[in-house]
Length: 345
Image (cartoon, rainbow, N blue to C red):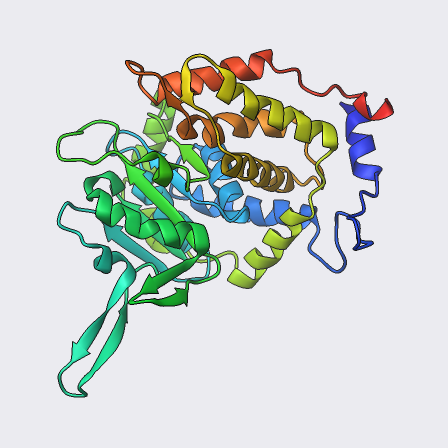
């Protein structure tokens, strides 16, 4: 990999018409992005035991302007992880507990008539924040779930014909349980496609569970968390991510993987072009968190399953969870990754 790394890192990679290199002018360096990511992971790690890989992927989604869907068994720390990330950043945090009687206006806000003034006044909903925790999102009706579509895709809300911008950043962390399906409404494909990553914490090992017991023995460490990064610093990191260099051979490798999801006989609906762009942004953010100004095949492999699997619809009689992930893993095994000397050709 040394030849490959040297070629990608030293190539100027100018953008057409701009004359700028991939690092940009006066922008934050990827090494600094790595330090920000490390500080956030360590701060979150004061509450969440282990799961560094999941936390790293969540930070990649944050830096790539995406959203995250956490699906796991109850009690595995999904909500605690989301709250710990929010507490580690300077910004606004809001939480919505999704229930069957929740209305779209409870999410986005609405104009309310003020009898004293004789005028309608806007009461903004919880989406007017920086980090939004949508807890148990699949317990709300499809009508209410759709209230997040415009928010997540366009970073704005339309209330009575008026479009209102949301905060920057606007990062949605939604949770849902794979069990207790009675009384739930599965997320439609259009909603799932808005989530850049679908992640799972999984059950802790025995040593990790002992560490959890010791950490929470006397008090909840979440109460002592304080921000370690400002929104301004986060914004600079996001700009640095945009400058990460992606070699044409890496682009072809990613497209080959995406195309295979559309051609596999087990898949009814493959990954859309929106999924391809999300794949690209996530890979660039992941590379920056590793302190690199360029992407390597390992970045693509690390992001393929969490970015692509939930966007696929399999044939009837097959579940759309673990089976879809297995399909993506098989595609990765069959796809030929760029070799370390491809830049010499």
